[in-house]
Image (cartoon, rainbow, N blue to C red):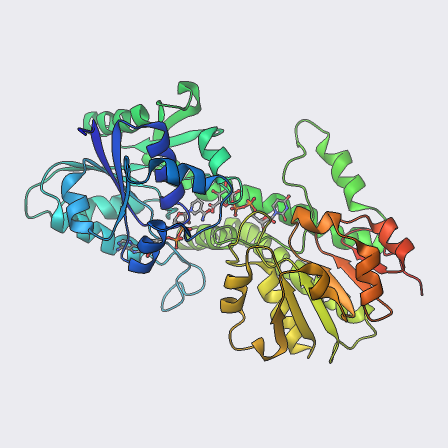
Length: 458
Ligand code: NAD
Ligand code: UGA
């Protein structure tokens, strides 16, 4: 079959795989190829067991793979064949040298730019899909400008706003698609070509365009604002616990103000995920680099409150369970950083598990999708950890349960049965406020929600 366009994506991760599957699904007239240096990951994308769990993803990959969606390790061929190249390689926090623990590590990004320059044999539009520090496009342009083949490139910024667990819905019906470009004739022509791709399914008024620096910066700022809301409500949970206020009531009263809105006000053990912390630290580093210490300190506070919340949860458990966790069996309900994903990157569960093991507790980790990753995350301390998917078996003979991930499954368990299998007094720490606290108390549990009065039998 002759395709209208050949599109390439470099990086077959949580972003590259699902976003390209969506474009392939909505645009059968284009051939989409996704390449990666990780051969195993590409093999998984080509198998029945995809490398990531995301509701609805299996279906669209099955419908498009081999038709107009291809996963491959042939990077050179992909670059040569395509007129438009998305780059969605990882941009983790740099863990060495200058900016260690803060700045974005751009080595994968830079290597990709050099690969494109080496193999390109005709004009290409390069689309930044990864989340990057503002002004990265300039670095990319400078590398590409040294093409020995005298090829011209246009660099666009098109940050991805999907959230894991709802990625398919987010891409199918996005709040907005943002495309930043140089405001030159060539830049605008390239931008229009990308607009045309999204316009196959996204209403035109939701595709917004901007200058390229605004686009790069908007992505960091959007994540910072989202994380800030979570830290804001989480900071108030500590005050609620001291004062007798109930954070759910406070969040409702505050969120019903239409200027504030009620989204993203769910209290938690802390936010996780591969991006919030990394992107805020990236923003903080950028501000410090530009000499904006006050702005940097303001945003750093969002991460500090998140660390405080995770530590507070562990200290609450310790204090409540008579100041010793040694040899107590504690079951974690959930390990993923949020429900409906198997992803555990930066999950608060990792911190909590490590701290509990430091206190010499024995851990049982339960999760419907994340046990494979949990085992990798806890390598080295897992002498004291068992992994049991079935929540009833996991909680049996435990002193306490801590709800870390808000999986629906945990809302509907038979807690009478769980209580009868646990060691008494039985404790439950609801790190997501998803359970029926009064009902649990009546069964016999000592119940510790977040930001609400505890219900205890002592
Ligand atoms: P990921 O680690 O899952 O995937 C990145 C992939 O890039 C890996 O498979 C890696 O092998 C590949 N790669 C690295 N260097 C390469 C090279 N030179 N050539 C070919 N492949 C290469 O990362 P991700 O979660 O998909 O995130 C990618 C980017 O998107 C990051 O900048 C992230 O901040 C951003 N982002 C992520 C999400 C999310 O939900 N995970 C959402 C929005 C934006
Ligand atoms: C987030 C953003 O929502 C996406 O727009 C963005 O594209 C993505 O980061 C990214 O750049 O990687 P994601 O991390 O997948 O998406 O998931 P979120 O739903 O934002 O949740 C992040 C964390 O905050 C989770 O640990 C979640 O449990 C926590 N959270 C979220 C709360 O504790 N309370 C809330 O009210 C909402």
